Image (cartoon, rainbow, N blue to C red; front, side, top):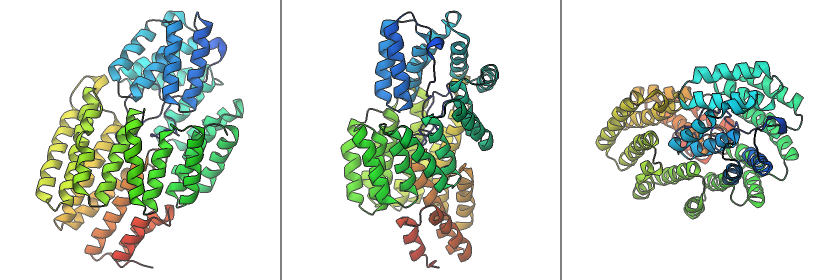
Length: 472
């Protein structure tokens, strides 16, 4: 799923989804004594909601938290849970209102609940330093609290401190040996580092512990998809869908399997049939982009343009709408480039860059876009700028810009979405194409080898290798 559905960004404060990357939500780890509510029915509904968050059953969790609040309107943790889900759907104002309500209840809850509320409140106001301080204090005072151990592990990993994150996840397994969440996150840490065998081992432990849940098989399916094991990817994704027919990330994975297998018409059919019924707005948005990208790959320019046409309308939130307006401009520029009109593509890309600079400096602190979003948008714009440079014959500039994009990837993009892998692989193919134009054949061969080290069967890289005369 999103970045990370699997890594599970447990960062309570992060209510804004990263562009092309998506966001996953926290899995709560509450004990009965840490839940303040006046209603037993509310408590039971909340615990179901927690479990459904852990399983990534977003709609069920939403209904559970709403039921908890029906039975106890002043249930602070249920307000935070519902706020997370609202944030995930891009409903930022609603998320802020829910967190404000929870914040007003601080004097009625336990210390651990208070930490969670304060962290969410600080994040809502764009104060990541305060969120980090509170998280560190919470962990220091409650070192065996499973929720904060998982939260801090995710937060630390997001900052690139992999060894510290692994240590915390291992501590989580010491205090909760059957923590399915820990095995899932450790699997993604290994996969992002290129340790595919270790990742598979962790995911299989996850599947053993949570055999009746869809997500373990979705995680395995994603690993197999991006490492050239397409038949196994399909089997795992179908297993996830047998358990949970509405586990839509596995549906997207099936479309990506078909793309890798060269069965493009089937990939189109899967996406066209499934997107209208997706209950997850974030996933539906990414699937629309994927549909457009597949059309670009096939040279179906008008279909690609139609897929991208309503992208900025997928969120009513001002900031999200602006982000997707910029993204739409870059995608339309790719269509113009594909149609052989680099001048129009350059104009559209310039407009996107100007709008991006305006967005970075506008709004209140809580409304500003974060670093992940900045990096994502900048990479999308830079990619088109590099393609335009290559189209104009300026291959030195193209290579320089493409390599900046490649360098920006923090490990392999497992757990983000298939779009990130498509973008990374396409960037390396583009570098190789420009290097060949410059007569630097050895470097071009090495560039394609990076893709094949991950997926030895990737048809797009193999085609490029043959076309460019770079066969070993």
